[in-house]
Image (spheres, rainbow, N blue to C red):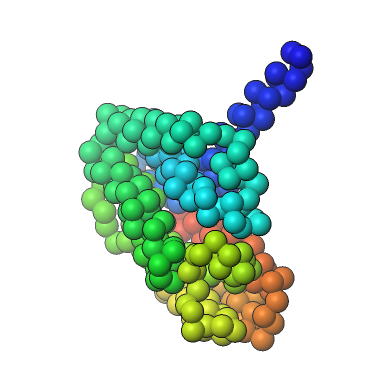
Length: 293
């Protein structure tokens, strides 16, 4: 009995942890840290960085939890999400709601008290725009991806504000980069799970794009713009960062352009996984060759 109880407790902890979407939060923390680093003047204040990351993590985890609470019924209709803690019934909806609210409130207050007002305001506005704008629009219009990319890019500005600096050109470059990066990333997911999304009533792709041709062209176009702006930005830092960014860009563009002719799920999956690798590479280059430090 004691062994069973311990197993049940561990399972509940794993389910609560899954509600926070840790794989997404890892990307959030990376971009927040990059924004903090680029906005810092002089030596990094590691206490300030840790406070900014912790508060942002709490708000992001609360956002993910509340998002799953809102979408629990529709998640149950999708094969890829039906086994999540809420649609599967392993966790109670009320418990998840309280868990999400606690994380969000504690995270917002922590940022307000331990960092500054601007960071707290940016984090809370990110949460609200994600839950009140992006989440309901997923069932109404394919424009949800573009609107959802705005809160998705906010960690860049949160990190910058956490460093106590004005939101300058480098922070806005990082914001634009993150905004554009989400298109090939999330549109690839939408192509991979098109039937699954349709089953739940999510309009992740335009209704007129029955063969996915428009979406595949959109992936190529946004990937190309992404590579161009990162290359232009890196060219001011020197030859080495420009070469690094160009190689990373080619790495992203190859599966994106291949997807135009190969409409398979495997081809879309390659775009998805390439984008996940591309993001930290560009962040690393941007921080490693920042000449203002």
